[in-house]
Image 1 (cartoon, rainbow, N blue to C red):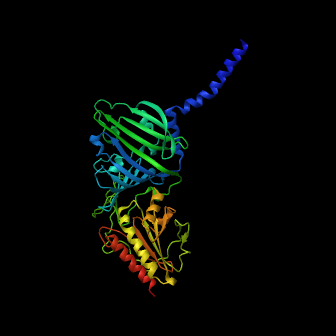
Image 2: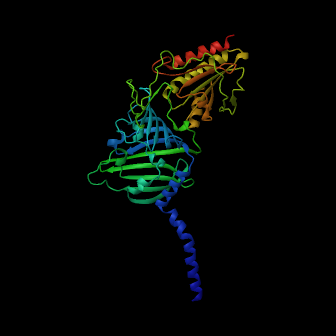
Image 3: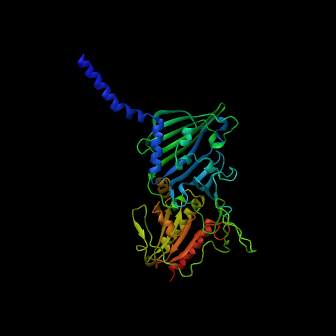
Length: 440
């Protein structure tokens, strides 16, 4: 009898030591809470993000798709922020549209390139005004003060499903059935889904995928947003800002208006900052040929390039992104420029041409494209984020020419309203600057 009692006591002790951890591991709410803690403590991260859709045949062609670079971090002015830059198809047959947006708890920021404007609006702005990518930002919850709390508050049921591998990460899968909308209310847009699934990495507790599922009888649709190549680390302020030329105006309706003055002269409200439209060139003249900043980066051949190593050489820096449509049109022409000057330039006045790919969510694909096309220029991918800031590059593609005395003699980017308007004009202008630099 005493032996049996001893066995029972040992079993109870063993159960008490193992039951709690197992329960926590199998508790979907605790998994979401651990993920919320990880999000609040992370310094930030960047990743490639894709949006895709699946559903019944009658609506499949109407679902959107997106490929972009996703950056999450803390901006000194905006606070927690998500920067998304890439291409979106509103539906299968629609042409891709480039976008550049920043999402924060207190404001939405986006570039309107046709109007040369950076817009700052409150999150409550009408859906007719804000760009479509905001509507499809399924991961907006990540910068909330209490991540996932909205999902938990709206949950009718929540369960843990079998683990899955997402982008090479083993993930816990949390399945949430949303409660029905209150009587008299109506959900629309992203909030219309009836179920959702969150895929949380077992290793770092950060999300890798979210699915928003709508099942309304004949109409069934799933929107899927997935992160891959996630890299955790402190994000610079520039990584969390919309990129635009200095000539763009800012339209900010989130700021309070300045009280009128007592003078008779009308004043402009703070949210509309005037700008002077360039008349001849999109780049200010460089009469004194300023000294190039003390830059440094490493190309794909693991060679370090800097102001010191380039002394005595003419250097061409081409800032671009493979995700940028104008860059896709300009890059082959840059290769021709590099090939021409490599064969024409005397050995004592060499021209080195570097293509600097920025914000590439898939560096391997960018390098493969460079190799497959046998481009003559040298390539650097995602160098130090401070590099474009050193040269005050705000729009892609931008070409900078530095002479053999390390002086900037040329800087231009494409623009719609003045020279150069086409990639061919941009390359021709760069060629003229290089020729002047190498001719005694």
